[in-house]
Image (tube, rainbow, N blue to C red; front, side):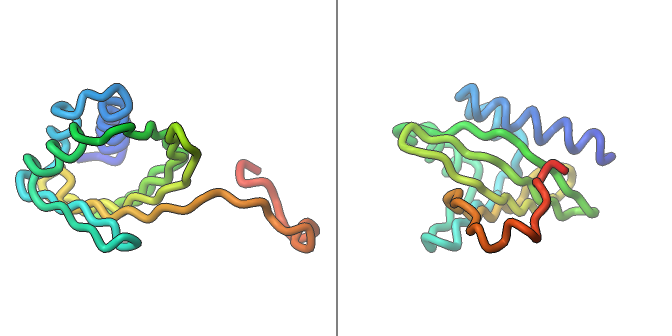
Length: 127
């Protein structure tokens, strides 16, 4: 799969999730997908289990992709994640197998205000 095709697939998968088409999102993962949240110690194994978890989510977030980085079968997707109760920034580390996501490891962080003492050293993220 080319980088361009991979990026299109990632964007389509996230669009399906954002639109609550979880069965369509599940088409982008392997049958034995592993979804891991190291910060909470949770691991979900299997496409059917992942799909059921997504469908049971009381108030699922929506994601805005900021960047996609890929090298071979490893990819990192940077997102802004929006929940009804607040925003997060999330990193997805994706391990691919045969063009599908075999493992998703996600790290979550709350946005914070940069301290003034670093003002002289910084450049805007988009600049």
